Length: 379
Ligand code: MG
Image (cartoon, rainbow, N blue to C red; front, side, top):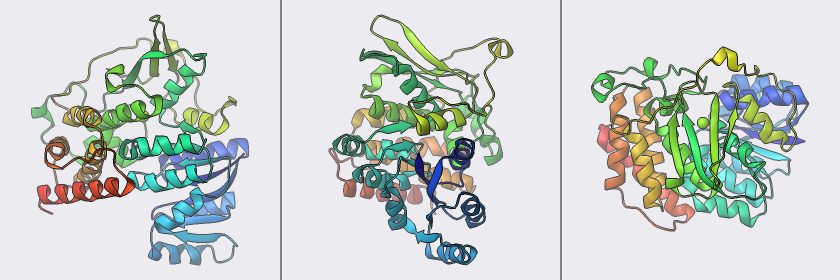
């Protein structure tokens, strides 16, 4: 097995390399946004043929760092797409945000199977991505823990149809809080996730419940179900990673410790299950499992994402792009925590939706969403 790894310096990227190290999986290419220092360390260990960084400045930095090697240095979106087209066992897409869309399409068109951690690709790209995957006869292996869980629950389905997906949510750091209590939430508080250690963007998305909204859309795309067939259940312990219900009422769930190396590894080694360094689950240590409803009044991002998937067309792209831009402003301390949900909800009413969009329609929806957020926040 050999892989191309897009987004190697992030949380999923570094854990993917843990798996590659443990199982001697060859890495043909690595990419990072701006973290050239870590990318250099990774390149020296894994000896890929190519690395890619976000812009010309990082590119010349990277070329200087790797001057004594024969590793080729590429740059920008063209570079990412070139890596995605290298013939390999899997393209692991672990970049953050909608940047992942074009490389996913490029990988599928080149006939490469894809291990996908970049949920924004599926949310914004919609049918375009799933159609492209189908038309090119490639497979999409989800890395997102919930979708990996659903995928695993379906491994024994023998062609039987599922009637419902039970999508579990940790509830994030602000579970049980009301709007008034969240007015003065700081960046530091939002970045403290109770169960998972992840990058900044997804951790904020978990705090606003946008992450669960994006995951609902992702589930609809991946498993070809209606939004009404996806039930979101807050499960604070993050032991059940999701479940499916079949037509006879039987529910099959996947359980494990909250360690992303389990779903990452399966996405690389499927259908084989190999030993994994993740801690094994002890139900005695866990004791009790609890289940609650999500509070969509407080967490407006979740209701907006639900609305977006029902509207269809570019609407999921609009809420996703608005959220990406709003989260970036929150992390820069330019807007408040509750503003994220308010802006995301409002974008859906204000920005015109195009049905059956082309890639260009999706890209212009993204630009409109970014302008909307900038105008809203006065920056
Ligand atoms: Mg997830």
